[in-house]
Picture 1: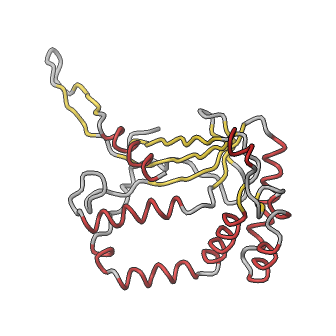
Picture 2: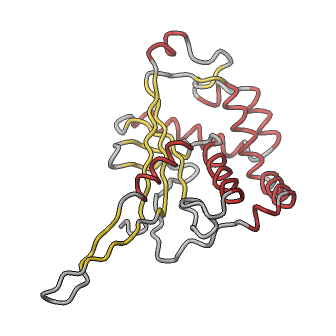
Length: 232
């Protein structure tokens, strides 16, 4: 995800827009440098129906930490221990930048028209890892072309995608997602989720993980898109 985000943004910034601002009868071209307003990462998985329960357990604890303020407190302590991160914080996003990419809510799925996928927020640590790398890069290379201290940070969205025609799968994901987000807010709910990962994931997360057959015929694809500040 992190490599894809960097490559997509680099490809976008290599583009230039040219406009003709000359008076009538004259040709005067002006070149405008592209700016990255957002990055979208969509993970897809093919021919694999199960995953290791360790991922489920990590998601439970991560969601709970975010919901009850533990994550916010932890990040505050990190900022206090590393003042250089505050000193090299990016400037605010310009008000003229579009709010892209669109991100589905925590429960209701979204729809990606160009990929023809139903999408949900990805519960993994990808977004945190990418933002941490951006923060680290700014603190170490303040004048970096893409992540320097004078460059506003792009809006980041990390999603999991499924086939558009899999309506039943989307409904199941919606139901299990609602149960997960409700229970994971409470410590007793986390205990329930940790005790029954298979039951609360529709059999997706198991202690055994993917079978050998699934590993042999399975695969994944990640789609990354960088959106320019002129996107509409």
